[in-house]
Amino acid sequence: MGPGPINAHPRVLRAMSADLLGQFDPEMTGYMNQVMALYRPIFGTENRWTMLIDGTARSAIEASLISLAQPGDTVLVINFGRFGLLLTEILERIGARIETVDAPWGEIVPTDRVAEAIRRVKPKVVATVHGDTSTTMAQPLEGLGGLCREVGAFSYVDATATLGGMPIETDRWGIDIVTAGLQKCLGGPSGSAPITISDRAAEHIFTRRHVEKGIRRDDIADGSGPRIASNYFDLAMIMDYWSEKRLNHHTEATTMLYGARECARVALGEGLEARFARHASAGAAMEAGLAALGLAIFGGTENRMTNVTGAWIPEGVDGEAVRAAMRDHFEIEIGTAFGPLAGRIWRFGAMGYNARKDTILTTLAALEACLAMNGFAVTRGEAVPAALAAWEARA
Ligand SMILES: *Cc1c(COP(=O)(O)O)cnc(C)c1O
Image (tube, rainbow, N blue to C red; front, side, top):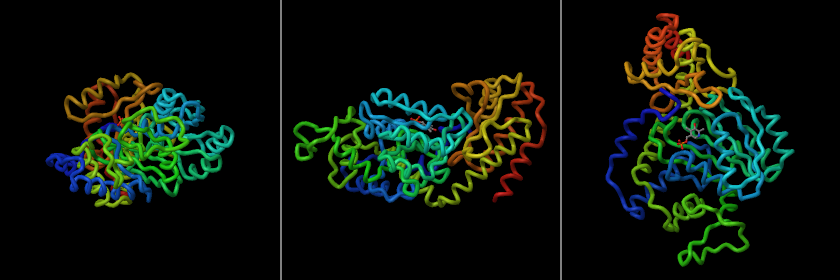
């Protein structure tokens, strides 16, 4: 019950126990095409290039940034937490010129400050996180694509922590590349990273294609910019593999693809609206229960993620001792925190398969016991009813 990874949905685990297929087997390429179709509604897009990067969420972040930005390009990062810092760290390695527009941890960057920064900096790329699990905040993205297009910039969004749990409207927001992972609200294991790429971004990437000697001479682009400095993360090559050309790149991670496909089937089977509502109920129940225990909730009340809730560790309570007790006595993992919040807040996730009434109630009951064991004057017997009432009020 931390901010991810979470327990995988049993159907996802079962799908992943199926036998392997060759990467060009028609059954396998059929599944690849299904994955493309299944993830389009999940990303809220009609983008042709909607597929998987083989690796954890970070692999798709790196593939996107290295494909959009070249050394010396100016990139504006909307930074409000640990994963915003990850974007800048990757961009530094690329050799981009980085500008940031920042918010303190626990807040988002207001849209007027984002607009002002984009118009002032006129970057080649604007990169941001949607839900930053490190701070439990979700950056509003309405209108971001339009602002980027005004200055001819590409837009990139890391939606790892929110895809499948909060609405993502890639096309309506006008975002060029959105990426995710399975181990948060999609209810799968880490190791596969869904990605969607606009036609406009794909065109830019194809002109930067890496040429593999002897294999793809007919594909040599004329007048292209510097090659993408990675073979594994060369999105042009990965798109060619996912296209009907089926040009060999990596060996698609069969088992992860089965898992990613089943995550999407489970999500669409439930219905996205119902799924978002379930995450919102779970978040509201968790928050009500934590408050009833006597804990103060972290972060601004607006723009908080529905699927992860932070609570201040009370004065005099050893946060790590409580986490250890939760794990040792109840087999429940809750989250610690990073950077300026390390040792100051706990983070409670309610994501994917774990965003359920029973998991929230047992977590709160266990936490009550562990807080009492660790010397906190906890309010007894109120957290579970408060959480239940908050859940029922939305049901
Ligand atoms: C969890 C998370 C990641 C993690 O990436 P992995 O490579 O899968 O560990 C990236 N971005 C955000 C916003 C996250 O919440």
